[in-house]
Length: 195
Image (cartoon, helix red, strand yellow):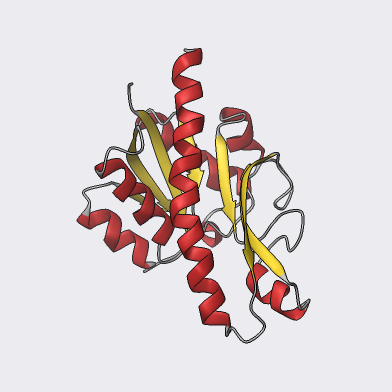
């Protein structure tokens, strides 16, 4: 099966990007990361991408006159790299119309909760504050809303009341790093068959 050309959008450490990259190297994911989009200066994912030889576009929103201008810069990069699919991996920004129209049903996100519960930022802290007995991870298509797109896959995590936040985050990451590459592979297999 041919490899789907993907761009990964990340704002921080990029642990999900690393899990995707490792799955590709292990031939468990039929994809090629042809670019990283990062919206924060000095984010660790930038160095990780450089170590992997993956080109990274740093775009700082405050340096653009509008969201449209910001996304046009990204879109130009994606078109130059012939990107077929966008994977959000800890990208802390809503996707706007420019990219949504260019990549309909071709943008996915991973979120650290069982959506529709605990949308938006700090989902783990939201679950702790709510004294939730279960949380988890969701992979979903991206639309114009905040974590409102069609759900593709979910996996739950039963919470032990004695766990510290760091422990919960550790288990969430373990689920993410397995669920995301597996889910992407299913999506890409379908894409390959439909072409």
